[in-house]
Amino acid sequence: MGQSPAPETKQDWPIWAGYGAALITVVFATLAALIVDHQAHVPNLSLVFVLPVVLAAALFGWGPALVAAAAGVLAYNYFLIEPRYTLRVADPANVWALFLLLVVASAVSAIAAQSRRQAVQARKAGAQAWTVHVLARALVAETTQTGVAQRCAETLSGLFQAPSMVLVHEGGDLQPVGLGGGAVVADIDLEAARWALLSGRPTRGGSYPHTEARFDFWPLTTPQRQQAVVGVRISGREEGRPEAPERLVETVTGYLSMALDREAYARQVLEGRVLHASEELKTELLAAVSHDLKTPLSTILFTLQSLRRFEGEHDAATRGELLAAAEAEAARLSRMVENLLDMNRIEAGAMPVRPAPTAAADLAAAAVAQASPALAGRKLINDAEGGPRLMVDPALFETALANLLDNAVKYSPEGSTIRITSGCDDGMGWVEVLDEGPGFAGLPEPLFEKFARGREGDGRPPGTGLGLSIARGFLEAQGGRIEAADRDDGPGARVRLLAPLA
Image 1 (spheres, rainbow, N blue to C red):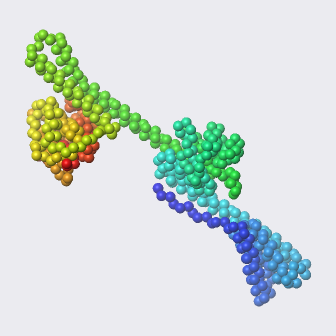
Image 2 (image 1 turned 45 degrees about the vertical axis):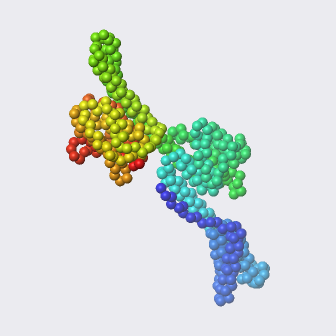
Image 3 (image 1 turned 180 degrees about the vertical axis):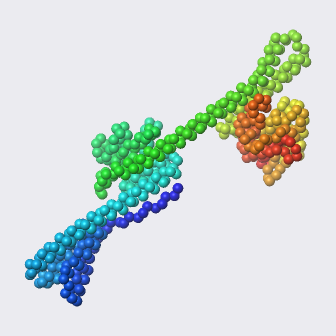
C-alpha cells in the first residue's frame, strides 16, 4: 500500500529575522504616516502603527510584536508629535495618546500572538495526526514482525525528529527489530530497556537507575502476551524534551500492539494448518501402509508357515509355487518401501541426479524388466525402439517409468494391452504409457498428489498411491515434466514422461 505524503507545515522564522522584519514594517508604517500627514491633516494617525504590531504578532510571535509596538510609539513621537524630531512631548494630551497606543498595540500583539500559537499547534497536531494515519495504513500491509517494528520506529522518529527503536522480546531477551532516525543500540540502552520491561514502568534517558542511557523507554505487553519496548532519544538534547510525549507514544504503541497480535494470530493459524496437514499426512500414510502391507506380509507368513509345517508333504512343484508367490509379495513389499523412501528424499531435496545420454529404448526395456512381476496378466507392446536419446539419470527415469507401468496395471482390466511409445516434440524427448482402463475421472492433476488413488473405498487398487507423485518428482528433478490425459483413440489413460534431448 503506497503512502500519501504528509501535509506541509509552515517553517518558523529565525528569531533575528522576526525582530528585523518587525522593525522594517515600522519603518514602512512611519513613511506611510508621514506621506498622509503631508497631504492632509488626519486625526488618529497613530492607528497606522498598530498594523506592524498585528503583522509581527501573527507572523513572528510575542517578542517581535512588542518591539514593533515600542518602535511605533517612538517613531510616532519623534516624527509626528510636536515638537517634531525630538522625544519631548509639548502637549500632555499626546502623552496619553502615546500611552494608549502602546497599550492598544500590546493588547493586539498578545491576541495575535495567541492566535499564532494556536495555529502553529493546530498545524503541528494535524501533521502528527497525518503521520499516525499513514502508519495505520502501512501496518495493514505489513505481515512480518520486523516490518511492523520498523514502520513504528520510523513513525516515532518522524514525530519527535529523534532516533527511535522498537525492541521485541524473543528467545528470552529483547531484540532490536526496528530502528529509525539512525538509532544505534548501545549496551546501556539495552539494559535500560530490559529494566523498563521487567518493572513495567517507563524510564527517562539519563535518569536513575541507568544514568548513562540516552533513550526514553516505554514497555508494552499485548493481549496475546507479546512483549516489546519502544525507545525515543528525546531527553538531554539541545531543543529540550517535548511536552507530554506520552500521548504520541501511546498512540503508536497501540497500533504496534494490534499489529504484533495480528502477526501472532497469523503465525498461530499457519502453525495450526501445518500441524493439521502433518496429522493428515500421518493418517494417510498409516492407512496406506496398514491396508497395503497386510496382503504381502500375510502371504509371506503363510508361505513360510506352510513350508515349515508341511515340509515333507509338499512336492517340488508346490514348493516352487509357494516360494514364487512369497518372492513376488516380497518384491511388491520392497517396492512400497522404496517408494516411501523416494518420496521422503524428494521432499527433503536430497535426490542426487546424474544425467547421461541414454536411448529411450534402453530406458523402456529396463523399466519393463523392473515392473515385470506386476505386468503378469497384461499384454505389453513396447514401441520405444528407435526413440530419441534423452539426457536423464537412467535410474530415476527407469523407476518413474516402472511406476507408470505398475499404475497402468492397477487400473486396467485383466488381459488388456499396455503400450509404450516414444518420440520428441518441441525440443523435448518423451516416453509414453497407454492403457485400456477407465481413464481419468475428471482432471488428472489431483492424482499426482501423495497417497492419491483413482478409486476410493473398498476394492481400491493396491499400493500406497505414490507412483505418479514419485514419477513427477523424479522428472522435475531432471529438468523434465509429466503430462497425463485420457486417450483420444478409445478408453484408457495416456501418461507421458518428457525430458531434455541428449
